[in-house]
Picture 1: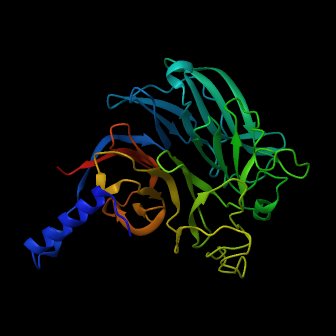
Picture 2: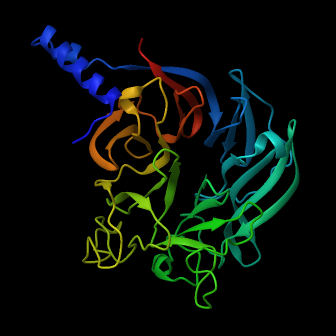
Length: 373
C-alpha cells in the first residue's frame, strides 16, 4: 500500500512517541491540532465558503447572508431572496463563482414556496459591497413538493465551469429518486447561467430531465470536487443507519431506495437489499447514522499527514470525522471534536491550509483547526 510522505512522517512520529513513552498511552494519543474559536453566538448558520481575498460567505438558515472578514461578522447582506424557512427548508449555501474576482457572482441555494408547493431553487446575484444585485433564479427543482424536508442544497464547481447541485427525495417521495422524469433524489449539473450542458447524461431524452447528473440519492448534504484527483465525493443521510459516502460519476445510480443499509424510522425494512445490481456501492458509510452534513477534502501544507483526506461533519453524533484516504480508498477513520458535544453543520479547507468548522443551531460557533505546534 502506498503512503504519502506526510502520512509516512506522521506514522514514524507516532511510533517514536510510543517508544519513548512506553506505557504512557495518553501521551501517545496527544492531538496534533488545536481548535480556535473565531465567532460565537451565530443564529442557525448553514454553510461557509471562501472569497478570493480570504473573506468568508456565511449563510443563516433563516434567510440571512453575512460576510466574515478579519474575524468580524458583517451586517446582513441585503437583496437575499425570500426563503421558505420551515421544517428543513431555508437558505442553504452561498457559493462564489470561480471567476468571482472579475464578475462578483454568488450562487445561492434555498427552499422556495410557490403556489404548487415548495422546491429547491438556485439563484445567482452580483455582490456589490453589502448588497446582492441583479438576482436571477437559474434553477428550480421539478415537480413541487408538499413536504419541507430533504432538499439537499449543497453545490460544487467542476473544472469546466459547470455547477453540481445536490437534491433530496422530499422524504415522502423516495421512489421518485429512481424516476428520471423527476428531480427528487438527484444531483443536477448546470451551466453557470442555469442552462443545461449538452453533454449531461440524459440530455435529449424525452423520458428524463436533462439537468440530471446522477440519481438514487436520499438527502445529500455534502459534495466536493478534488482538484488533485478529479474525483467528486458526496455523502447523504440514510434513514436509521445507512449514511453513505460516494464517488459521484456521470449518469450513475446510487441505489436509493432499492438498496440501503438502514431501516425505516418505524424499524421496518425499506428494502431487503443492502446492495442492488446496476447501482453503485458507497466507499464507506455509517450505521447507526451520524447524520453527515458538510464535506471537505484536505489539500494543504499545514497538515501534510491529512493530505487527500475527507472531513465530514456529523449532526447526530456531534463530531467531525476524518476519513483517511489512500489512493482513492478508505483506509481508516478518526472521530474528532466529540468532546465539544456540538452538532457540526459545515466544514471547509481554507486558502491558508487550515480547517474551518461551523457548528449548528442557536448560538453556534465558527471554529478554526490549526496545527498544535
